[in-house]
Amino acid sequence: MSAEKLYLYPVWIRLWHLVNALFCLSLIMTGISMQFSNPLVPMIRFDIAVSIHNITGILLSINYIGFLLGNLFTGNGRNYKMAFPGLSTRLKSQFHYYIKGIFTGDLPPFPISIEKKFNPLQQFSYVVIMYVSVPVLLVTGWSLMYPEVIPTRFLSTSGLHLTDLLHILIGFIISLFMFVHIYFCTIGKTTVSNFMSIINGYHETH
Amino acid sequence: MNSSKVRPSWVVIVLIVFTIILISVSYSFDSKAIVPGGDTLKSTQKTNSKSFAEFKNAQENESCLKCHGQSKYSYENNESGKQVFKRMYSELILTRTIFYESNHRNFKCIDCHSEDYKTFPHAGNLRMASKPNCLDCHGGDEMYAKYHFENIEKEFQESVHSEKHSQDFTCWMCHNGHTYKINARTNENIKQTIIYDNAICLTCHGDITKYQLLTDKENPNLIKKHEWLPNQQLHFKSVRCIECHTKKINDSTLVGHNIRPKAEAVKKCEECHSSNSVLLAALYKYKIRETRNAKGFFTGIITSNSYVIGANRNYYLNLLSLIIVGFVVAGIVIHTVFRMLK
Image (cartoon, rainbow over all chains, first blue to last red; front, side, top):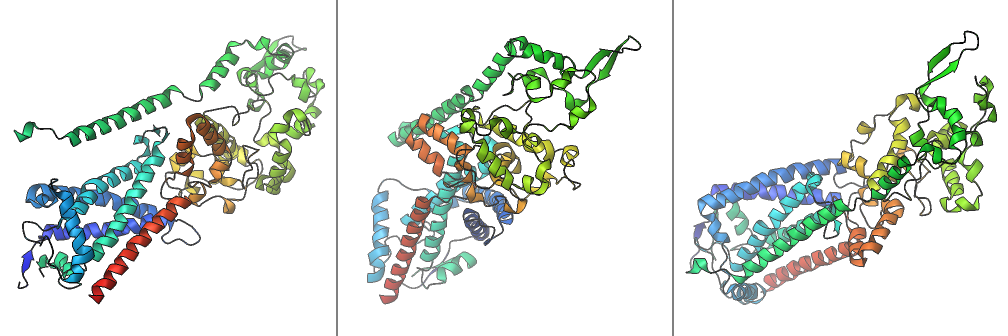
C-alpha cells in the first residue's frame, strides 16, 4: 500500500491541541513543584507556582470549553463516540497489536482513516481523559480555588481533603497519560511523522 | 423502539450518583446539627442564668466591682458632701459576666490584690506592687499537674517573648487572670478555640498601643507579612498563629509557649499538610484522635493521611505513585527496545 496523506487535523484542532499541551505541561510542572514544595530547593518558587497553576487552570478551562464547542459543532465529536458492543474485543485486538503484532510486522487491526481517526485504544483513553478525567480535574480545581463551595464533611471525612485527593490523583493519571501519549506518537510511519501531523494537519499512513 | 429501551447500566449509574448526593447532603446536615460548640454555649448560658450573687465570694467582691464593674463610679466628696461621678479608666474595668465565666471566678479580689485596696481612695503605692504570675499559685501543685505549668514556664523562658523582653513580658501579657478561661482542652469547637487563641496574639500584634508598651518598633502589618501564604484568609480562620510560630509543641501542653523568631516560623506546606504534620502534633492530633475514636479507624486513616493543596507526603501513596511511574517508564523503554530490535 502506497503512503497516503490524510488531512485529519484541521486548524482549530491543531491550535487547541497546542494550547492544551502547553497548559498541561505548565500545570503538571507547577503541580509537581507544589506537591514536593521545599522553600530551600524550590523547583518553582511556591507562590509563583500557585499563581501559574491557578491562572493556567482557568485558561485550560476556557480551552476545554473550546474543545467541547468544537466537537459539538464541527462533527469532530463523532470520533469520541464509543460503540460499547464488542468494545473489549476491539481493545484487546489493538492491545495485542501493540505488544506483539507491531514486532512481527502485522498490519494495524484498525487502520486510520478520515472516518475513524482513532484506533479503539486511542478512542477509549481519549474519552476517559477528555470526558471523565479533565472535567473532574477542572471541577475539583475550581473548588480548591473556592473552598467555601466544598461540603465541610463528605462521607464522614473532610470534603476539602477528598477534593484535593481527587484532584491530585486525576492530575497524576493525566501526567501518566502524557508520557504514554507522547511515546505512542513515536509509533508512526517514522518516529517523528505523528508529531509532524499535529503540526501540519496531515497524517501519513504506513 | 430503541429509544424507549433504558440500559441497565444507566439505572445503576443514576442510583450511585443519587446515593452519593443523598449521603453528602445528610452529612452536611449532620455536621450542622452537632455544632461542637454547643456545650460551650450551654455552659455560657448556664453561667449567665446563674445570678452573680450565687458565686462564692461574689458578695465580698461586689465592694470592688461596684466601682470596677462598669464604666463609671461615684463617691461622696467629704468636703463638699456632694456625690461625685467619675469615669472608670478602661483598663481597670472588670465586667462581671466575663469575670464570672473565667477560671478564677470563685476567687476573692483580695486573694491576689492587697487588702489595703479596701480603703478608698486607694493608696498610690499599691499599684507598685508586683502582680502574681501563674506559677506563683499553680507551680508545683499536684492539683494542676495535668496542665504542665512548669513545662509552659520552661517553653516560655526559651521563647522570643522572654529573650527580647525579659522580665517585662509576663504571663499577664497574654493571659489576663481576670478573664482567662480554659479553652483548648474543654471547647470541642476547633474554630472557637482558634479564634480565642489567635485573639490573644492579636491583643498586641493587632494593636499598636499595646504592642509599643514593650518596643518602639512599628507593628508589622500581619496581612502583608503573610502575603506569601496561599488562601491567607482561610488559614487565618483555620489555623492558630502558634501552630507555625512555636517550636515543636509537645503533646502534653496543647498550646505552645516557645514562640520563635519569624525566621523560624513554619513555611513549608507539608509540615502541616501531611501525616507528620505539626498540626497533628498537638491540638489537631488530639481532636483527630477524638474523631477517630468516635468515627472509626477507616475515617481516621483518611483524615490523618489526607493532604491539601498539593503537599502530600504520605509515604505509601508516594511510593505507589513512584512504582506506577516506574512501570510506565519501564514499559516504554522495553517497548522501544523491542521496536529497535525487530
